[in-house]
Image (cartoon, rainbow, N blue to C red; front, side):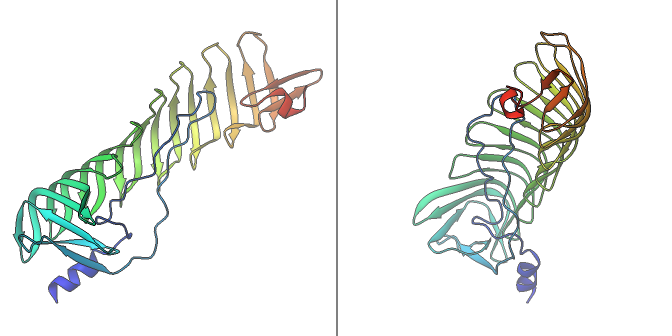
Length: 269
């Protein structure tokens, strides 16, 4: 009854190899003109019944959510009450072939404490775990080489962190439920930067964008482009435009300006 109660208590988002599924890959790094996209974890699904997978050599078991067929393990550490405990190496297999490999601490058959995982898709995570999840400070390295460094809660980034793209772009600021949300800084590899508000991964709210050529926009943003009152100044033409922007477009009498879009998209050409 004690083990059953423990397993039911530790049920959470269903994934293979406990609850530490790799997050989706970044893919091709975006051009520095537009804010890059951070890959997102899928929303949680209703928890599935937990199960145990045993090492056939030792009989020691680990807990797995959403049990799948032909999953196996080998565990090199200690075993208490039939469950993996303490430090060791946990190798997962599928149809007899190696998949995820975990090195670190276990408690009652779950990842707990400090550890690192090499996923089958070649992504990696190193940091803190709790009840089988990435939970606490850690670094997730994507298959592309991009990195997310920060605080994880139940497997997803939440709180202050940094995301570094392979092209050198870097975001520093808060994550909320896996999204860039709050006041942050986006540093571009070309020397440009944005400092201001983010909502669900997009530039939204008040912020300042500076380009390497000296152009600057200070004002309201929505959906990654100026929307609302703001000022564009500097740049090669050294002109200043102030007014209410719509989807990155501003017309001021016979003059016009664009930020984050094209003259054709604004209907100016």
